[in-house]
Length: 99
Ligand SMILES: [Zn+2]
Image (tube, rainbow, N blue to C red; front, side):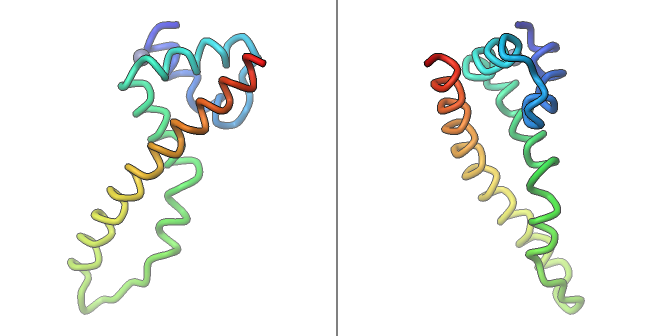
């Protein structure tokens, strides 16, 4: 699978809309390709993460900038955690498909 195709498949993969063969090719590709794994992580964030991150934050007008910086830092931290978690998830999914 080419990078362009993999990135086109990312959303469908997260929504579980890929057929088995395409999903296999997709997972195989993102495991070997950092760029597409990053794309997948971003797609995942867009689908699942953003609203939860927004809702979790208390907006304080007196420290709007601090809040904004904090949010970016927390988001960055969660992004790394999410990336690790997603990689594990993809491994598990791959194992299930292989069995
Ligand atoms: Zn790729």
